[in-house]
Amino acid sequence: MRKMKKIAVCAAAVAVAAGIAGISVKAVEGVRKKWFLRGFEAGQFIGDLTAAENFACEKTVIQKKYDKLCEEFEELQENYNDLFDDYYEV
Image (cartoon, rainbow, N blue to C red):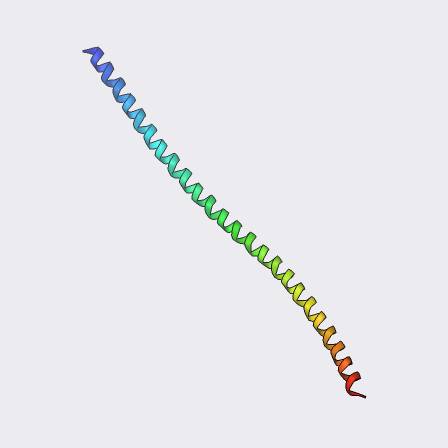
């Protein structure tokens, strides 16, 4: 009878340990999932900031090209006006 009690106590201890381990695994998975989602959200935020920064840089490049085209247009307009004045002054 004593052996049966010892076996029952050991089996109960193993079952409790397995239950605690199962709960621990679930808790660890919950924490892992929570921090993964936080990391994912942080990664998205950093990605959005990087995209905004790149867009701002591209916008300045486009603005520079536009300014250069405006300067060239002004030069061409001045040349045209000079040629027009020279041609019709005769």
